Image 1 (cartoon, rainbow, N blue to C red):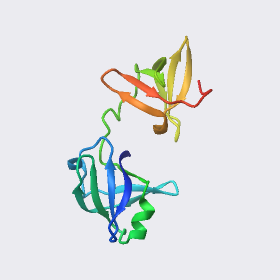
Image 2 (spheres, helix red, strand yellow):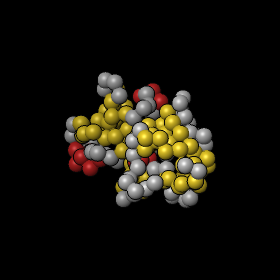
Image 3 (cartoon, rainbow, N blue to C red):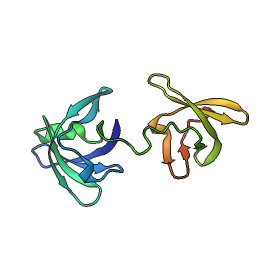
Length: 158
């Protein structure tokens, strides 16, 4: 699923929420498809009942089953995901990409180990292969045009 927004605050008393969009235009949001918000680590589907642009990169939305200020406040800080959008390069396997750790070049991706729940990049570093977890929290920047993946890896990982 693609992270499309984050709930920044409640708006009014009827359950409306203000969202900040991540690298997506408001026009790309399909109100006929569900969006997902995680609760206890599980994605819960919601439908967008109304969507009003609020400047650039923000919108006020009303989603199903969120009908009060208290309900809306529970969503503040949570991220919104969609599974009907494809992230640019989502099917890219990163093979041949240069991997960096906070700007320091580590090596080149030679393969991906698709370990369930923990996909890892196989990075050729100084003549040996090193497995590096490919987790969204580690990604600082993925530049498809230069084929460079800049990560923020925990100390001691590589």
